[in-house]
Amino acid sequence: MPFIVSRAGAEGLTYEQTRRRSMTTPTRGVRNQPDEDTWKDQVRALALVLPAGAVFSHDTAAQLHKLPLPTLDGTPLDVTVASRSARGSRHAVRWHYSKLPLRTAHPGGLPATDLARTWLDLGSRLTLEWQVAVTDVVLQRIPATELHITGHRRGASTLAAALKLADSRSRSPRESLLRVNLLIEGAPAPVVNLDIVEQGVWLATGDLVWPEFRFIVEYDGADHAPLKQRHKDANTRADLSAAGWTVQPLTAIHFRHVQRTVTMILNRLRSKGWTG
Image (cartoon, rainbow, N blue to C red; front, side, top):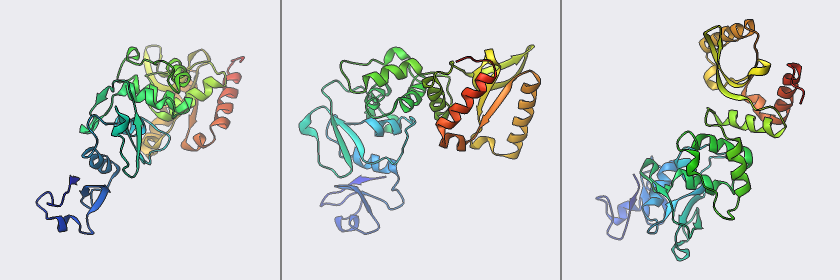
């Protein structure tokens, strides 16, 4: 664990011992063991020397809350303070100021803005697609009534649109991103993670389902790679096909070309009777 150092040393070490090359210096006045240099260790280190009342916010809070983000490099660390004079000059810290009361939480024991405030702060940082992916996860943990878009906040239009498009039944960011892109292109809204039941028999849970067109889009992520799982998927899709359902499986490669994938799905929907 990181620890604060002074001229008197620290953690049972003399000052000279804390200066050993084997020690890392994640931020000024703090040392860490060389085998403890993960992103979380850097956050813990900075937490030891934060100004009074300061909390991690924005992207850093999102990562602490395990919200989906387009990039997870983790730097610089975002910190919000309640007074402009409290902002420091530490390396790799992006300082923010808020005169509004900070709603705080302690994910992983670290001070951070709570889920609702973190959601607000991300509104000016994320595209609509990613804000929906975040909102889907947030709504699995807190009710929508806790999400308030205040005043003339930057990103307010993105936040409002994300709330309308969000669906707490989503189980993965890729699923959320694809759903939003389909809706933007005018596709009929799918039912998310719908149980498919035929004549009283449960057949499957579809990722994105259009019951009126008996059409399902399924994302085959890494958990679908093992042979046993692929065998199970094949049997499930055979049962769905026999019951009159069409299944369109997607892989990670499809998500490298989202617009092409969206066009393919729209064409499949048209072939099933959609007139949009």
